Amino acid sequence: MPTDKAHLAIILVEPIYAGNVGAIARIMNNFCFEDLRIVGSIPQKNDFYLAMHSEQILEQARIFNDLAAAISDLDRVIAFSRRIGKNKPVDMSPMQMATYVHDLPQLALGLVFGRETFGLTDAEADLCPLRCHFDANPAFPSLNLAQAVALACYEIYSFEQRQLEQGGSKKLEAVKGEELAKIQDYILNVLHSIGYFHDHETTNWEQFLKRLLAQLNPNKEMVYRLRQMFNRIHVLVKGTGKGYD
Image (tube, rainbow, N blue to C red; front, side, top):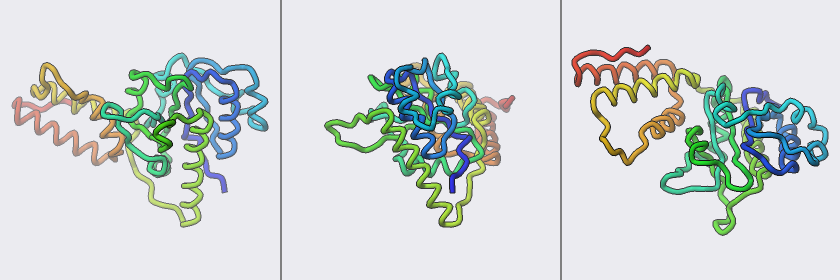
């Protein structure tokens, strides 16, 4: 039985091949996805031909000038990338990604796929707290855009079908993106206020904290406790509390 995926957006950053976009529309229809977002524009040639019986997804696709605008209403964002390394850590496998998505049906989620030519820029990748990576031949790890979307959509769809067959599973009561950003800013403000940071930091603490919170998926009580903890730290160091609002 198909499950509702209205809370899941597929986001393509400046795709250049119409065939890929058309194929992605058909793939989304195969696995019950509806929300297609494109940064840039839709290539015109042959896209409707390859979107056989899925033209409505292309017709309803939303176009954005940049990635920040495309994800502005989303609570969590996962980027897909073939690049891995010290500065490009992998947070989850495709199966872990499917579990993550399945556990948060009440949140608006985005799956971001970069350009066919060079993927996402560093600035764009920084907008996406979480990163998923498909294992492939190390000598040729780059997947075709439509194939990457197909693998991600299938992983989510098949995981949900297995969960339905097994009677479902408990969902996380995680806070929305706005509240997650608020506690992140509060923690950073406290750390700045007490002089935690050095003049020349080798760690991007903002990105680290954004990634950590997205992985943690705190509920309202956890956010309250984090606020309480860092307020007490501020009192111990500075002698006064730190307002939250």
